[in-house]
Image (cartoon, rainbow, N blue to C red; front, side, top):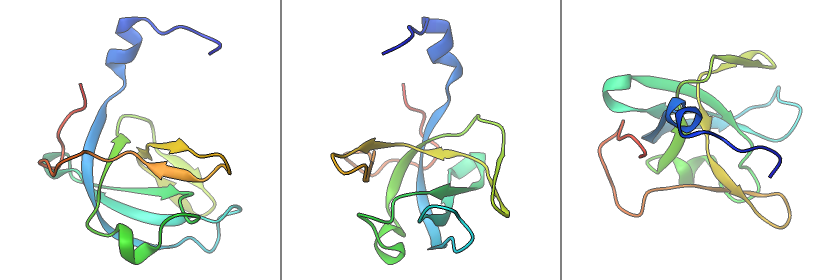
Length: 112
């Protein structure tokens, strides 16, 4: 690690659980990715781009719950505005392994 966060820094990161409600191949992306819409309950639905194509198909991720950072500013990726950041672990071959709750929880649940 190259820097240490303060507790106040960590508290600024708003991580929530949401359910993927749609996914499609992001044809315009430079690296293989999906365009995903996630339902965060009372926080609403947010779009994101995720480079998770090595381990997941669009069909299998629909309905899955994921952990995402929801308080980043929107970021343009090709012709798409990403509104949150899905979190995952990085495998040996740089494949992304989604972070997911062990049990189903209410959409919008805050990570503490």
